[in-house]
Image (cartoon, rainbow, N blue to C red):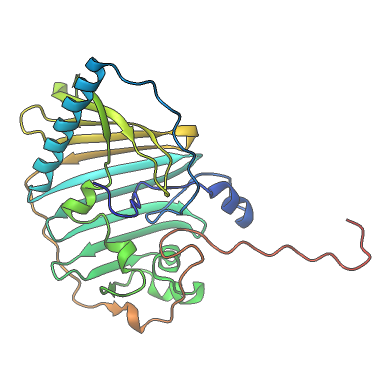
Length: 294
């Protein structure tokens, strides 16, 4: 049940990172961002036709996955912690989700630098942003000179504002669960932390414009069917993602800032790859003087 663009909001890997990194002079790594960048994904290799027992196992696993997602979507809320890594870069995010509100804290490496920021989604669907200068440039689209003055300040972003769609995705219960897609193939019993018995649903994470396919599994409680963790290893060495879920049934308590700068009052320009994609412009090559040897 991914969102239309399946941004893999806090887990997406920008697959063109090597090009970006070389352009801006930072170590080559897989840069992580919430929005993701469209890229060409090769079609999956043709798999052998499953036999009847495999088809039955896949049907059972798919039904269990659907049951887990239904149970999770009906929850008043939950907490989560996620890590995405690859090529030396790491993204971490922690958050709490409710049915119509929630909050997230990010730490990620992009072409703008180390971005550290928080997002709050109020019940009235206003998003509040607070972060350092690097994140203000990338997420809000302000200039480097203006970003320093916004560091640490709350900025309110309304529906229809440029960065809104990229910021609000992944915060609520339903939107956050859409970040854990799985084409289920089979199940097995595993032992979780503290000796907890869990049911593991194995399968693949489908390829999208933002990320390649990968092997994945979702561990759930065998009694409540609520998720405990989601893990995916992307193909072609593109990275890994791990998310853990806790505090099911606990609605978040979101306190909105008493004062905030309205994004609409700022002087902004959408970043090259879009808001929150972590991409800066590729410098133009230095022209060679006429008659100079190359």
